[in-house]
Length: 232
Image (cartoon, rainbow, N blue to C red; front, side, top):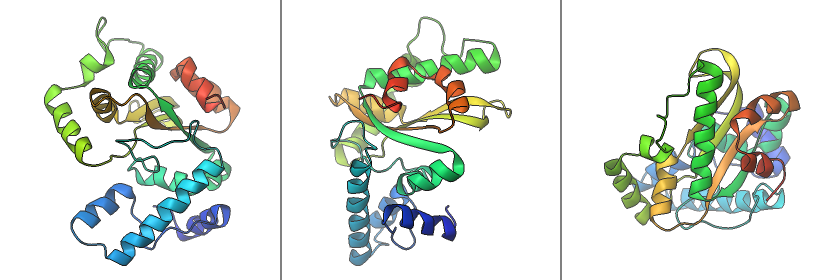
């Protein structure tokens, strides 16, 4: 979680102060469903979410403004990324990390993660068989029984948006310092596709400095590069 000084900097940058005891969107919903949050606390969170949404639109964080039928457009459910959303200037200036929320078709999202996985295999492991030849990333990674559970959840409530992470640091896959790719939300994207959603919001995290961006862009599809560099 973010320390007190960082929270203060975020509030100074954005003018938005998070409710006391903030633990991330996914934790808030779990607390609310169990009746842990009072009506007053729920109202505080709603005011925060509304203010944050207006702020994101004002700084151009969305490549396309809009709402999603199945996804929240202000949360990934990951605490560190929720802090990035609330305090973008702090992370850009002090951590060298920036982000953008873009809209992709389910097919474009799957093309992005297939590119990331295959490129990572090639660059970090000298192999290309994590996704077997002749199989799509959906055929390899998605299990029908679990997909049906996710579809059932998304029919009832909005879920956190998926993310693509392009990072330079200690890779969780090789334990070495290098550029690497990570993602979360493939099942949710496929479920949205089955439910008829044409585009989904995607949180894309990537480094600010050009030399690091040059390293991670090897993992990006041309469309992702275009969108994070200012295209729609």
